[in-house]
Amino acid sequence: MPTVRADITLTVNGSLRRLTVDTRTSLLDLLREDLGLTGAKKGCDHGQCGACTVLLDGRRANACLALAVANDGADVVTVEGLADGERLSPVQEAFLEKDAYQCGYCTPGQLCSATGVLREAAHGWPSAATGDVAAEPELDDDEIRERMSGNLCRCGAYVNIVAAVREAAR
Amino acid sequence: MRPFAYERAATAEDALRRHAAGDGAVAYLGGGTNLVDLMRLGVAMPARLVDVARLPYDRIEHRADGGLVIGAAVRNSDLAADLGVRADHPLLSQALLSGASGQIRNQATVGGNLLQRTRCPYFQDISKACNKRDPGSGCPAIEGDHENLAILDHSPECVATHPSDMAVALAALDARVRVRQPDGEDVVPLERLYRSPGDDPSRDTTLAPGDLITGVEVPAPLRMPARYRKVRERASFAFALVSVAAALDVSGGSVRDCRIALGGVAPRPWRAHRAEDALRGRPATPGSFRAAAEAELAAADPLPGNAYKVPLAVNLVAAVLTDLAGEAS
Ligand SMILES: Cc1cc2nc3c(=O)[nH]c(=O)nc-3n(C[C@H](O)[C@H](O)[C@H](O)COP(=O)(O)OP(=O)(O)OC[C@H]3O[C@@H](n4cnc5c(N)ncnc54)[C@H](O)[C@@H]3O)c2cc1C
Ligand code: SF4
Ligand code: FES
Ligand code: FES
Image (cartoon, rainbow over all chains, first blue to last red; front, side, top):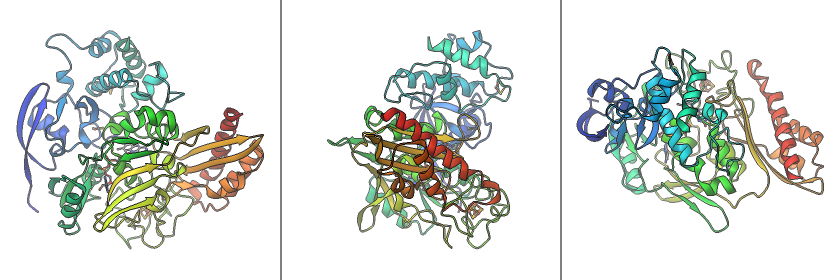
């Protein structure tokens, strides 16, 4: 079967993009290869590491498992779109202040994931660390560790990542 | 990855029609968190994807008796966070939250979660034989890496497990699955959605090709202490070695009612009917809990590398029931 192409429209970091994509293209490859947004990283390409995390219609998602064509019409925010011009987002500020990275490879995914975590917590979403799922959870360190567990860090910067997310949550 | 045509279904009928027109090499696409991965690995090679994630089955209906009708396109995270589900069916929230990661739960649908394929390492590696992926080629897991595979309900042809956490809670809750077929709608008890591998492990379920899951019905709330507990190789973001969904109703020191389902032990969420029958009417003591768990696992037929799952499952069931008995009294 020959390559199949499709026309899609995405809003990426606030700008409308019209694109023609091979149906096989993941959202991650589209961002990195076609749009030159290399912030989101390809750590595993199997959903296992979180390095490719972006905000898809406002929610954190693994761009490696999302087909671009299936997300026609979506709003995508990558690490390049977290800051407001020169002003870093609270999560970015907290990562800087708490020294929450070493090599930085996992950091774009950590930043997008943490941004999603704060939104989920603001909506009162529970996690596997929430004792009583019916209650409103408090974002303590156990909660942060559990909620961030989809983002691996080969450098083991976890202690400072937890501190940064805690700081950003205040 | 093989090139494929992509289509968005507008209605259930439209999805079935598009599936039928695809001449076999068609797959429904939910969130894609399992299917896209398997396509990338060369395990799944559809020539056409019919996207069903945007069908209007994206709502959770709360019935007057507290029962639920969960649309197949509801995302795992939305189901876990639903206030009514958390209050009335906490077992379901807990099981969902123990699965995958926050990112994947935001993407995964209820229909896709039920039909996700096994994580058997040979199934996912196209350079290896595997009866499930390539019927008749053999099952290297039996002589090889089967640490995480089944101890119940397997066959000499396949020892894979079903990996879903959500399905284990749904089995304990007596959930039923709504299936749209060419000639109408069927409602299948969750336990009958899955099939034992027997001599045809290529089919995980009793669904026919093209059958579309449209939703899941959950009966009225259990109104008894319930818990999902999952044992895995690391604290989070890993599949279950063994998990249990349990609920216990104690009255006057004896078990009035109970529900027990196990994950990680069989090619399906394993409802522990034998243990439940052994417990009803018995004293709610750690001794009876252990005896009931042992009665269930007496049927286990482990391989050398996964024999550890038998005592693990017994201990886990006994421990969770003991905790629940403490809450009930
Ligand atoms: C790294 C990683 C870790 C994970 N850990 C866990 C875990 O700990 N516990 C757990 O339970 N799961 C885990 N998962 C699996 C995850 O839960 C599933 O991938 C997800 O639930 C599948 O849902 P989906 O909508 O993305 O399905 P898809 O990938 O879109 O589809 C899966 C299958 O279902 C079929 N399908 C989808 N919708 C329908 C429908 N409505 N009717 C008929 N057929 C349909 C598709 O054709 C396909 O065969 C993990 C996944 C990854 C990648
Ligand atoms: S256990 Fe089943 S899925 Fe795994 S290799 Fe054997 S046949 Fe394949
Ligand atoms: S690259 Fe997507 S999760 Fe690893
Ligand atoms: S900082 Fe190096 S991988 Fe996380």
